[in-house]
Image (cartoon, rainbow, N blue to C red; front, side, top):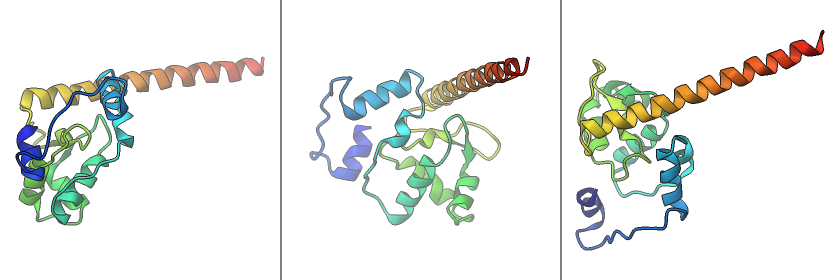
Length: 156
């Protein structure tokens, strides 16, 4: 992370200071890791980069949690289907991983491909999100069944 920050803001321009867990973005990130995977969706971002990179990074934020897309699908989504490699480079230059979820991009064959934090972290993040989506789907289905039961009881 320090390397990416230095690339975007200069070597001596960024100082990382731990924030209290209940403060602003830190609490949102903590909520994400506690299973509230949509908590990061509302975090505002402001990054330096080319217009193309910013377009890719915005498209990354549109990938729903628990889902993946290939580099080719992402390139097509931004209207540049031939720019698969450029999309990969922009993805790799993403300065704020997790919030701009570059881990949701995979190879065309479904394989896990490069991730600045390492493939084990990418696998963990994808599994974390998929488990949370499954839990929320089960909870929603349970709620719907009980709602239908309540509705049916009204007719007895």
